[in-house]
Amino acid sequence: MAANNDVDELFDIRNSFYLGNYQRCINEVQKTQPSSQDLKIERDAFMFRAYCAQGKYGVVLDEINKSSPKELQPIRTLAEYLQNPARRETIINTVDQKLKSGDVDDYYLLIAAIIYSHEQNYESALRCLHASEALESAALTIQINLSMDRVDLAKKELKRMQEIDEDASLTQLTQAWFNITVGGDKIQDAYYIFQEMADKYGSSVLLLNGQAVCYLQMAKYEEAESVLQEALDKDNSNPETLLNLAFLSQHLGKSPEVSNRYISQLKSSHPDHVFTRQYNSKEKEFDRLAAQYEPAVQA
Image (cartoon, rainbow, N blue to C red; front, side, top):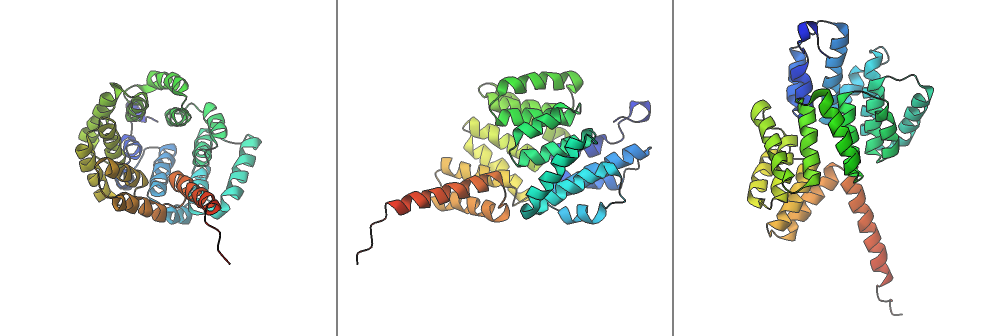
């Protein structure tokens, strides 16, 4: 949302959030005094979402209460969902009922879609996003379509996103992830986007992992290791960094213990990550099958 004279008062806040510079986003919020109440609420929304991205759900739950602006209530729901795996079914049911009531705005639709995406309930997520005109909704739509191997639909939505704002950082990042999925010569283009964003706004774990994925696909393993170590220095428990390091260690010919160490750290620090859930499921299935071929115990 642009303020007076088309000056985007929240540009640095919004941009930092989208680029994964969450602490910078929070820092920018502290020194930004928007000119309208709507912008103040939007500013605070990015701050609370940045805390969620850092895993600091308690901050969000402490500060957003029933008396807080209604626009911030969906972020409290998101924090509750992320913090309490045991309550997720109840929270999702509440979201379902809220959506059925029709008393929702674009922002609620976006947060609902994020929650459904965590559940890999892509049909419900896309239904929410279809009703939203926000640029971020388009980006998430593309991400979901790529996850579903629907490159054709992602390409169509990316074109629409570029028509809205081709130069926006969010559009550029989405273009980079699309290029990675397409592969081939597009990998180099994706790398340049990540590098340009890092040069212009500063590196982040998100941008470094983007560069690392490009290096991995180009078989530049030493370069990938360098940027992943930098990402690890910024956040030693980021799940994407740990996954990429586990994958990379095998290509570098390191001992199995190295890869297993990264996976163990991921399982410990992110027990609800989609990879962790799938990995644990495969382990249980393997153990079940292996038990069928164990030799019978002799009496």
